[in-house]
Length: 615
Image (cartoon, rainbow, N blue to C red; front, side):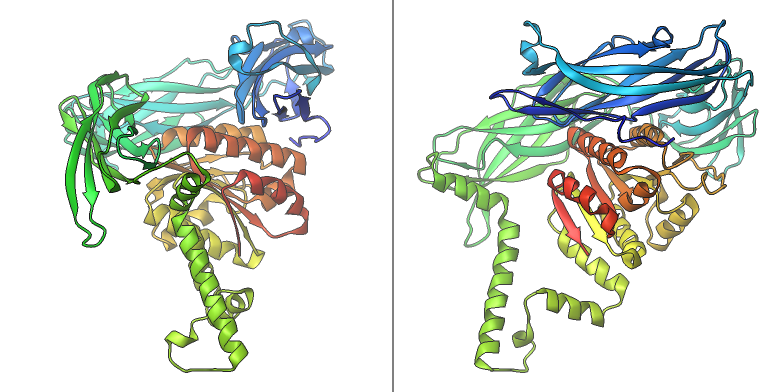
């Protein structure tokens, strides 16, 4: 399905003094070419708000088939926060009396109100024109039966408790499918354990992707790793990996992910707030979760530290799956540099410790000086790198000017100018040079940073290998890899070559099926065509839902995506992906192969990313 840029219009909503907002939608066209009388289909639109204010969206059907169209529950209006997006489910129900032929309709998307969402209850203003998504329907007399087993996931369980299995089935035909699913539990060597379960007569409507859940008995099994094999009556088969754990392991589980201060510069007698980000990743309510902190005064000359204070926050209860902020307050009494260490106690347990730095000056005022000091502190690593480079450059120029040339190793240090980088590249092989450059450029970046990497086509393979080693193998983050450049089997070879644990990577493969391959894998989703961007977005969402924190996204590559889609569609898709990473605090790397056709798109993405790396 090719998305037409002229259909996927971008609406600019201009306000007076409050700023501007822009909404977009992808895909711009829904094309259903093989429906039947009395048939059903559904598709998801993604409506984005790239502006700096919330927007209230209204949607309505139009055209000759407007009576066939409906939307998801409570989706005639959508509140879309700034710099984010929301899905809109569009349902198409064909009457039993509709003759064969071609039909056309529209979804009209209007911005009803823009601004602070607390003001939406006041009188609203309709902004026109809006976005228009065309819907093309062709009714035929051909009934197509088919479905596909898309993925299988199994959550870890405890000894003698059932294993919960989720199987995703997609109806690929145009009439109701009734798959039969067989579940079989295998041991660590993939031998049968005798634990099985069957599901039958479960209807799936056309175009619908449906999740089926089963509980598989584990009574009598020892703790350890196991596999779940899931097969369907049409030949589908997938295997998922899980663990049976000791009793009590999963019931109470907390994740302490970050400790931060509301300010890093203060004065004696001023109060500072410490915030802990803590998630209930278990199955039951966490009771009395509380942040406890210790304050250490650092002697910078000796490097020693002295405990000078202990402070605690108030306890709260946290429901399963909820991320909470736990706060505690501290008032330093003397100036100096402090190390604040914190941990969370909850349900009789204690988390790991995390630390951060607090600077206490004799007198801190809200002046340009204090703001400058905060800026320097936050960017100290970058300042040191830039300062060192400038110093080396000055030494190099001075020596070149005076004509002095010494042979000692220390005196041969050169600044990394373009000439030096070119010389370095000549004496190193391509893979070594690419990896060294990426390690240098990625050093100090936050796990939630979004980075655009531009490479020559000849360096693409080396860059992919290096990035997987640096990001996945070294840091251990769990990643979704959206591959438009490498088919699944080839990507698995890259993982094996670079010692990347396959369980750390979930793949959205946009290439294999288009090339006629039909691989099956528990850690992969297979998109029919790279031009099916809504399917890519859907499977990316599902892939990420399977991963535990911290999460990371690779998009490989923009250039390949541009081959199968127009530039406007790729830009909208990429904006949605970046917005998702920002909202859910994922890190990400977007790879682009240097081509003239990509230059305009890359320029629009650079301001949205934290850094651009050009190899």
